[in-house]
Structure formats: C-alpha cells, structure tokens
Length: 461
Ligand SMILES: Cc1ncc(COP(=O)(O)O)c(C=O)c1O
Image 1 (cartoon, rainbow, N blue to C red):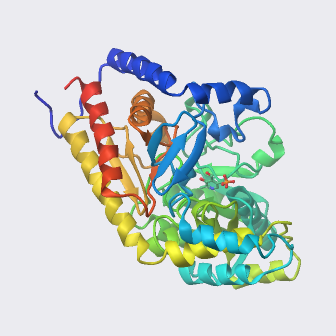
Image 2 (cartoon, protein in one colour; image 1 turned 90 degrees about the vertical axis):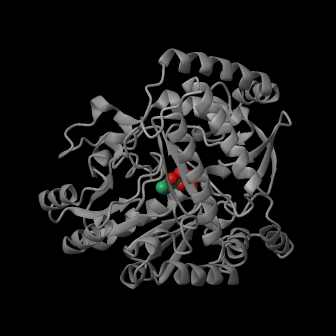
C-alpha cells in the first residue's frame, strides 16, 4: 500500500458517488424502525420532525434513550454520541448528579413564575465564570440573542445590527439574515448583501441587519465608519461554530472590542455554543476579551431548555428600571435552574475542562494523523469539548472560504461512515463533534476506527 503523506490527494468523484450509494443503502437497511417512525410522523409534523434542524436524508434517526457517552436508536442500534444534542450534553446522557437535582425539584413543585433560590445560585455562578455582573434567564438560544438585540437597540436608541456573514444566532427576524447565503447572493465582500434566510421576514427588518466578514477588523472598521451613529450592536460568535469551527485570528477580538467601544456599539458575544463547552468561562475567558452582552443556552442548562443573557451594570439598570422589557413566563423555571445549577457546579466544574481539552486534542491529533497518512484534503480544528474534521485542503478564515473550499460530498460521505460505524454524528456539512465528560478512550478509538475506514475506502488505499 502506497500512501501520499503530507499532501492532499485529489479524490475520485466517481468513487465518492459509489461509496455514498453503498453507505446510504447500509444506512437504510439498519434503520427500518426509524423509517417507520418517519412515515407516521410525516402525517402530524412537517418533515416528520419537531424542528427543521432534525430533518435528514433519507429520514431522521429516531432515538430511544441515552446513557453516558452512548445513545440507542429505535432500531436498537447503539452509538457513541459525538452529536450530543447539538452540543448540549457535555454532562453525558442521564447524568446522575443532574438527574438527582431535577428529581428533588420535581417533588417540591416545578413552576411558580416567581423567583426561587436556584435562579440566584445560577446567576452567581455565571458571574463567577464569565465575569459580567448581571444575568437574566430565557428559554433558548434564540430568546437569548433576541433579548440581547433588544438591549443593544434600547440602550443606544439605534436600529441597525451588525453580524458576521455566515453565522447563525437563532431564528428571530434580526438575525435570520446572511446565515448561509449562496454564492450568487453574497454581493461584494466589502459590502455584502443582507440576505434573508428563508421566507417570513419583512424586508424592512432584514435591511436593518448588515453582515461583515469574520476575522477582518479592517472590514468592520469601514462598516462602522460608513454607518456611523446608526449601529446598535454587533452580534458574533467569538469562535465561529456553525460553519465547522473557525477560531479568531490573533488580535482580531481585541480590535473588535476597541472598534465597537469607539463607535458606541454594544458588543454581543453569542456563546450559545461556546459557553459551557470551550472553557470554564467560555470564549470570553478563553480569549480574554469582555463584551457588553453574553448570550448562553445549550450546555449551560444541563440538557434542559433554558438560556441566559449576561450584561454590564449599565445595561442591567435599563432592564431593572423597566425601560427595556425582558419577559417570559418560564424564565428561571425551577426545574431548569436545578439542572443548570447541578450541571455547572457539580459536573462541568473548573477541573472538567482540562480533561475535555485533553481528550479533544488526542482525538484531533489522531484524526490529523489519519488525514496525513491517507492524503485526505482535510484538516482538524477545535477547542475545549468541540472539534471537527474540515474537508478543505486549506484553513478557513471566514464564511466565503467555507462556501468555496469545503468538499460537501466528502463531508456527507464521512457522516454516513460514522453513522454506519456506530458513531452518532451531527448531520450537516457545517457541524462539529461535542465531547462529554463521559467520553472514554474506547469512545475515541471507535471514532478513529470509523474515520480510518472512511479514509481508506475513499482514497482506495
Ligand atoms: C451560536 C448560536 N446561537 C443561537 C442559537 C439558537 O439557539 P436555540 O436553538 O436554543 O434557539 C444557536 C443554535 O444552534 C447557535 O448555534
């Protein structure tokens, strides 16, 4: 067997198509019960799923249960879970500490729409971790970013929002703009078009949101100069996590902070994905740049539907005075707070992060070794509990790179290999893996075996 090392091979497209067909057939064969559930679900849910993110070709994998690092689908297939509920289940499935806390809370009543001790405990813990002094709660990442946008607008009296091209921040009007625009829709890089992500968003609202490229502080500076006095806030993921993973280049976040402060623009770090996964204090602490607002959800609430917004004292005063309305019947729900408190203070404690990082680095390094040995046009990226193989021969710095350089066919085939080799992996070319504290050496090895089989077959080695 001869392998090219260190240089990317051109992969035969016909071979990818053949393998894809074969793996799809295997996938269908293994998931008859999911297919049945799909047929039934189609009659009562659009696309057979509760949220469009769960749709998949040929059908979604319907899950029965999970424990630790493993999940079982309705066909009885057991998988090691690297999907982890879109990056939520860093605590592992059916985590006993979180389970106990929630069970105890169930017996004491689950909802009052009045504050309980849990909300104080969680807000104190978030202050410790992220540094911002004041917190409010929400029910999802979408609500967190929606409230953050309202806060930025309310505080500045301005209407426009800047976001990063190719970023997803939930599904409300202000941020469903330039999420995954197609090549022909992009416009100039210096002046990208505001492209609505689907139907249902009034044009007048879409036009209030402008996109700028990631990792380019000069482009941000010109946008801010051009829109002087009009921009309320910049919302961004400090490390992009919805077009695989793109870390910030050195010095970028520091300049973003300087520029937004100079122009009186509120800086919103959307840490829905990075929050409790890439360090004890999320991206804010990992990169050492403090925003005006932090939005959280996913992993912070231990597998329950909740989110939070962190803010400066000045912004908090506007909320406390009732100038800006931050509302919600279920905000700070006792059950969610019990789960969040246990997840943050008993499971995802400060010492959990070096372990997650170490497992992640081992997995990344071993994937990179496979990439190099088989000459795959790919590289690995990641931090904390998050990582991925990016099917591009060159590193990505921004969305336009992702759109033009990533080999979507290879990425889709890799997903099929993973699923057929008992690795439950996030569907979609743009996604990544999330590790939990339950992931063992065996789980990592299982991933590597699947990935190496894929590498071998696709390169014909
Ligand atoms: C960065 C980011 N922000 C916000 C959201 C929206 O969160 P939710 O799905 O809880 O509404 C997501 C969801 O994937 C996200 O990745």
